Length: 237
Image 1 (cartoon, helix red, strand yellow):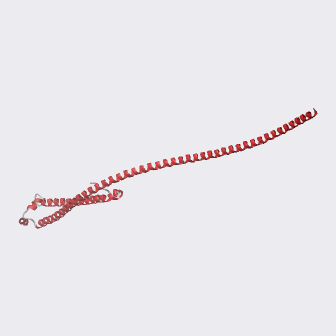
Image 2 (cartoon, one colour):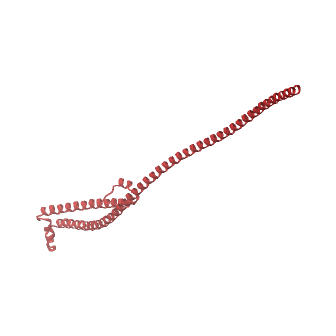
Image 3 (tube, one colour):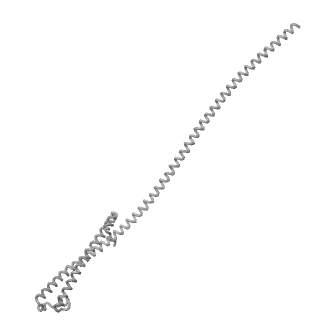
């Protein structure tokens, strides 16, 4: 049986308060019965000592001797002695009645304590089951916490990978754009070079045509001179 102090009661969770209350009630009841039982035993002992002392002073050997004296022989006792013994016997009867009542109350209290003890054991079992459930819930919560932590870490890793992939993608886009720009510039440069070559070719052609034309003109002049000379010599000969 577990007895819980008031300080421990204040620290108990709600599902254990009933057990602590029963334990405190059992402790209080047992303390009260112990005090009452001790007091009755003390009074009974004092009464026995008083009767024994009185009987011995008046010639009896024990208090039991007084109880065994026949009622018809009581007249042999002196009146004050008889009255004193009757008073003591009356007080003893009251104490016996009170003691019997106390024993009955103690028996009922013991029965109640036994019942409450059984109930307490049942509650302790329930509390133990609850504690086991709580421990399992704690383990489950710890498992969930670890799983959540793993998911958070996985999410962070995924986030970092996504950021890295995005950075790589943006870098590739920039490189591709630069490549496209370079290709456009190259094509434009090629087109410009073609145009310039064509222009140079045209200028060279024009210059060549001009030179050929001059040469042809010069040849024509030479031929004309030669023809004139031929005609002149032909006529004069």
